[in-house]
Image (cartoon, rainbow, N blue to C red):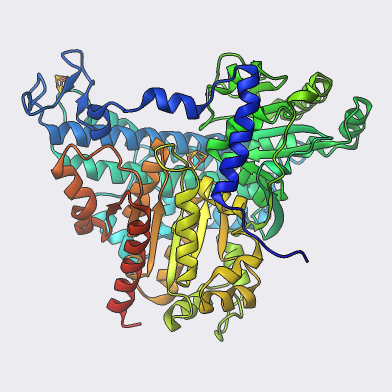
Length: 630
Ligand code: XCC
Ligand code: SF4
């Protein structure tokens, strides 16, 4: 085996610079230039003090004008903005979840989509008291999907999956009126509360933020994850590769981008079809390479080992390689820049969802009923485009790393069996992991998640924090673009164990795992709250007592704030490297960084200095250990 060497962030940056040179040749724009034009950003927006929810405004709070026209003070304005931001994120994740439920509803023995993990489906059916006895699996799928869809608008009651949380957590939610009702209702209520002339008191607005976050994490996202597993398989450890070097100069390159696995799964399925490969050869290519960007990439990497071309701020680089025949997108995190950029190259920019339509794209509407035809059409389009490549523009950076991915909660429980001397029952328990933590072999765990953001040197925060944490015997569970940052530099290569402290290194060797575990896409952060719940139940502790924290050092999207709200809402302290535009109100800052502890025993920490952010997480983990006397 060749010697293991991590890719440095400097090498990633050099590769990007080289691609920007190609861009300059064809007159391409790039985020690196646009961000300069946008800097400095609007201070009113950045601190959250601008209100434009009615046309008496927009009102901006300054020393000279401390209140809006209606008399709302800065705390009301900042808190309302925060709630709207959260609600939009919750809506986005949850609507993704709804699409998955709709697809599940359409599964059939001879259909485009099938049930790949019947065991998981039956487990959920039982959990929801849906009859399974002697029934056809597709009848059960149909009923489960229908029930799931009603979670979005049911008139009474709270989210079904809340029952998966430890008793204590459920009690906190009940007592503080945080248990989310129907998902759509929580989002609507957030918009209602923030309408002109409704709430302007921070506490109820922040409470509603947590509630809509929980509707996402324990509702929409959780259903998205669970039913994706049911249809496409629950992830198990699988080998893959990451970074732009996974694209192939000789092959037709199709890059999937977005979030919904219903599309990417179909593309992967048909790109493997011998007929398609033969067609690609006819057109002068050696084969077809499918790779991915952002969360849809995480989905197909976790289940099929499809390579990850990169993360969020690398999406333009894909086109800049000059070797991308088609970038196929569904929803979320897609740069509208891809339209004009693809016009500078031969690349086809294919949009597929009515939810995300963009100028300068080819729109091929993707539908569960016609999924196979749609996927074939898209792949054929990419193959036909191969001959249009301009060889003088082709440059694929040679960088890539090996990664082992696919650590669903189920997989983590399984691989850690037997690491400690604990008896494991048939269902699997997190007891071995608890024993590793209690004995101090592992000090704790950090859930590293979220995006890239040009306000922070891309990938640098993710990578540096992970290196620091694993050196301190803290295991990392990662998802989203954070996971891809780790994979790109080699932190998901099992040989990265050598970067760990002695304890974590031993665990990695015994369990044969990398120190940074890829848990999937951003909706899969619902897997993390389930893992935390299992740890709490199996150890008899409350979630907030576990030496576990969450961290999103480079986050940028509304979805990320919704996630932050539900992770905190679940009792896990969360550390951010970017301020959620609330610094204009000390009352709101106090609530988010401390006040929420009274409701959910957890809160946010915002720290822009990345090294300090790491120190603070380690400190918090050690504090929790001390409190437990371990
Ligand atoms: Fe998007 Fe999910 Fe952020 Fe990456 S991490 S930039 S939200 S793709 Ni979710
Ligand atoms: Fe201004 Fe009040 Fe209208 Fe907001 S709601 S824009 S603060 S008048």
